[in-house]
Image (tube, rainbow, N blue to C red; front, side, top):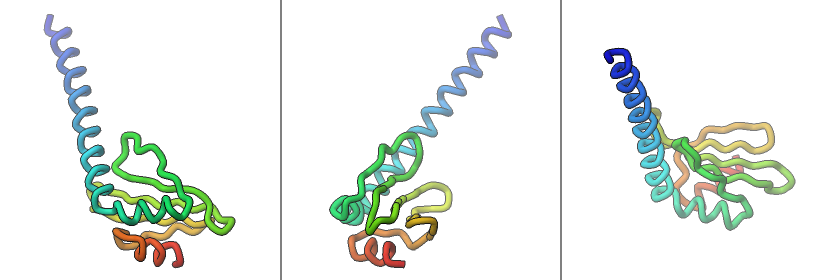
Amino acid sequence: MTVVSGALAGVLLLVLGFWAGYAVARLWQISLYEEAEPAIAAAVARGLSIRPTGFTSRIVCSGALGGETVRVEWRGGVLGARTIVVRGGKRLRVAFVRDGAALEQALAS
């Protein structure tokens, strides 16, 4: 009986760990979207599409601008909120992009 209860406790801890990780990622997604909503709307207006969020603490818009592949990621986590811009083969970490003007500046750099 001890082996069975130990195994069940392990399964329970595994399930609780999964749900805790999912909850933290979902809270980050909500926080990022609320803070960067104007920038995300500007990205969608420029033709980028929002990718499904999944189980990560980030929001990703991707598409093509001027013939180049572009991806803008708003990320959260232990390192705090940040924005990653990938244009062509160039990856750039910029200050957290909150509005359309900051998005334009990040895409231009």
